[in-house]
Image (cartoon, one colour):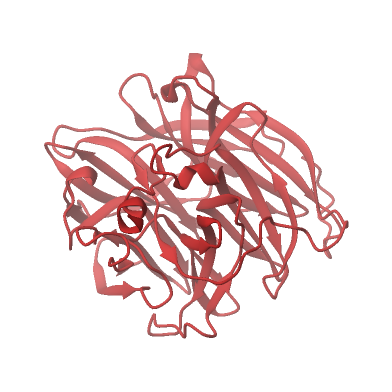
Length: 399
């Protein structure tokens, strides 16, 4: 019975399947903030798209301190496209354009994720259909007012089965995670391992190191997180902290009252291995809510910010597999202890895919959201700006 129930524990959002599991003896029922000190103060909310603009979803945000870039899935009610908008720091629109539309050869555009270094944004995106299968591409853009493309992959970086058709051993190319560290570009995709059920599944990812211009695959490596997790691979985030690359993902957890889902972070060594006793960090431990989809993460001034989606525990019920769709932002100190948490998505908005950027004394969260109960194709892009209270450095700019 337990095995049958766990197999049905899924979180699906616009074709994204996020599931994993980890045993734990913890039984906390909430995410308490240790004290009453406010570190994040909500100061402004913006809606960037609407019906007249074809709606928008799955935004990713990045900035070089001069411009703000919003890369998102647009034109939801027609032929979907990947788009970018360039704003100044006061959110005045400077430019916008289409980055990619679907083709008969590769299928329609689906997910897009980004990473950045000091000068460039790297986009990795899937094009897919049942007929064409799944195809993963990459492109590199200069962080200027035009978001100028300077390089791209030489055709698909990877090809695999359409998401719903993938069998064990095949990659699923939706929602790829990436990171750029010391001039090296890393791209991570999920490896399917489902046939034996979630209790027997391995948490497998495929890691590729790419050339800086994205034209070559330098090395490919399989990453197995199974000694720290139980279940197949789900949406993940890669982040560089204190000289090490970390992965953040949602995992199932067994509590006395039943199953829930928490966020975990794993620190890799130079060979992409880890010590399960010293390199696994428990970012959330909640019995009565689920935390999944850690799309956004930034580490600035010894402070970690993570944006994610929460749901009710009914999300793990096989009879009612749904979540509340609230989006939250957590703030941690350098020891990864929670020091503040704030809700991002507005009341009455079903939220998904929240990404984070930090600019000076402000934390920006871009997310997709639709009115609860409405058509998912009528989703829009929102941005919420928080003031980082008592940050050591003050830029003097107020958005």
